[in-house]
Image (cartoon, rainbow, N blue to C red; front, top):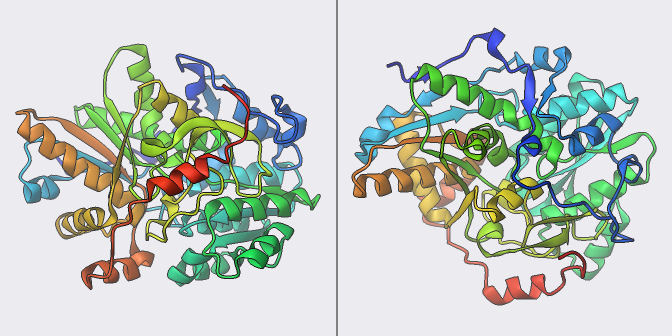
Length: 452
């Protein structure tokens, strides 16, 4: 069998898959940050176009992808899947390891799967400008790309530690026409307030979200755009898993284990939700694993509770696994995984036992990334390397148990802009961060007093 498993251009999915149609229990209500009561479409209208609000709450199983979006998807979709035979040989496993490679997109990651639709729906709604946040810069560059395709202005609040760690990501955003500032910034009231108390703040995704939400809420021509967490974002990413389902058929195989790295949850949702449909229906029983950094252990050490999505408490309250909205993570290189919360859908499915979670330290993750790069020839992003590490761990577990399993993971982006992180690892400068239990308990003590 060929190691590269490809679909024809005509086989780009025509619909997104909405797992809310099949979840064993309906999603928990989203609550207004002021009243604590369930929110309605009017509450979200200042931030999002109505088409995205409708997708956020829809229970329709398959949602059509507009032709204009599919035409842009065709620049890189369908993306290839590979059988990682050289990796299998390198780690001496009997298991079959497959990976879906999303680094072929113009922005180098899976993020344009949702930035393109978000820019499209904003353009259709007559918005002129989009404000967003970014951690490692993968989402910011994807949103800048989407905005440029549809003639929209984009403003990106980039977490300050990543702004300085990853200057090439900032440059790429600017190539696509975005205005990028390090967050916390002087451009918003929220940013100025944080800088007044902590001038050296490294920033966090929670802070950057606060700035972008404030920016959008105070301008009529501007929408807010989020690259993960929300239901409509997870929905758009299911093009990944839907293609995987067809590619596994070509390979005459089916995954025993499906793995995605998990920061906010959209990449995880994208590859896993179409397979979770089979699991929920009882037709198949894959293990579905979300992998996160030990320094930001949301699913493994957080609590399942209502919390704000941002530090300044501007966003609606959602029920999710959280480390507390004022949690400030260590400045690890996997910037896209440094978020205090998780997708409410991923969180609920994890809480109900359909998804399991693992957390790993970054030195082990980078070690696995090098094994992968030297065997498969692709330099993986630090975020994706968490999924690689888990795949290797799972393959070795299967070997020890005398099993031969099919393991599928999402290689959600390349690591060409992360070479400074690899240089730190090769130079022995990377250290492991275990977020202290007392800091987690302190952050969780500030959770809002609502919900069950």
